[in-house]
Length: 396
Ligand SMILES: *Cc1c(COP(=O)(O)O)cnc(C)c1O
Image 1: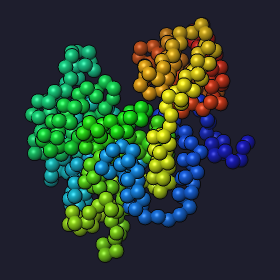
Image 2: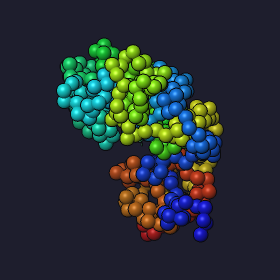
Image 3: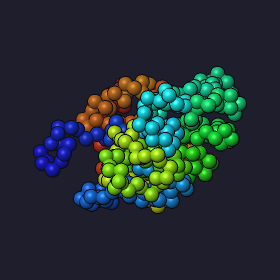
Image 4: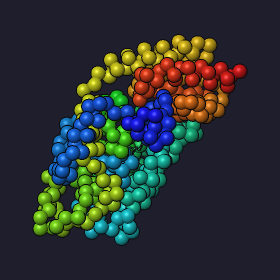
């Protein structure tokens, strides 16, 4: 037994992850520079508000937004975004959340944008109001979200609109932005997993959305429990206030620079986000990961991933394996493995020794996806061997 291996000491198995930076598998595998920065950050005391001010400047540079905040994940960013849209600068509303019945708290959400992560918006105390239809998603028809459907749903109780963007839904985003802007309603965009490409860091802000959430523990390569909320300065400041520890003496409290105290009628108590506090280690780790992500040569990294996938595919001759280059996926190259019963093969791989994970996102059409985003190079050979063995035994 290796006495310095924390997982071995706990009796927890290491897994071969060819499914992507999934939260349930621990998210990203961090680069040594990120780990080193987090270790250095851990051995000091700093003012977390001052650290978030510095983070805001870095995130603003990377995204083009007015301001930014390090959160404990994209889901936490969505809860804080919703809380900011409801409370703005009103500390009595901050104190009341998640009980928002006494003031406006509706968030519009198109039926095309409904995901399991909508719960994160509702956790703020917001009421989610479904609008529009899902004709394209269900195959029932050709129409997407239309401006009049948003306009007619906007009432005095609406505080924001939510949108979960991806390559398919982005066609509906410009109309949503224009309509929200014309009506003074902030638009909150969930772009948690829309990286790479790195251009998406700026894309939604450039288009005019008010707030955007990204995961830090997926492709960004930051700590698993980190994320970004970027956007309008007043909304980010409200989110920050509702996340910070507020056990402060009003007479000695120095607010972060993002927060203009003149906007506050007093000093808020612990807010709805106090349970999602970002630690100094996560904040520093996320910022170092963000800088690396912005500077990385994606074309070179994808070429390396593609040659690794070609080698794995070559060892699977005889099976139905197709390589999709990054130019086709819009992110990293992947292998698609067509099998008769995708979920049975996936289950067998997960029960193997070592356990192997492929992405099940296209299992419904008989495809397992080998996503190399966080696959360690030393896992290529054992992964290929496990795939060969399992495919042979399940096909035979
Ligand atoms: C992963 C994901 C989230 C949650 O992100 P965390 O950083 O794990 O909190 C939210 N929305 C979408 C679309 C996601 O893919």
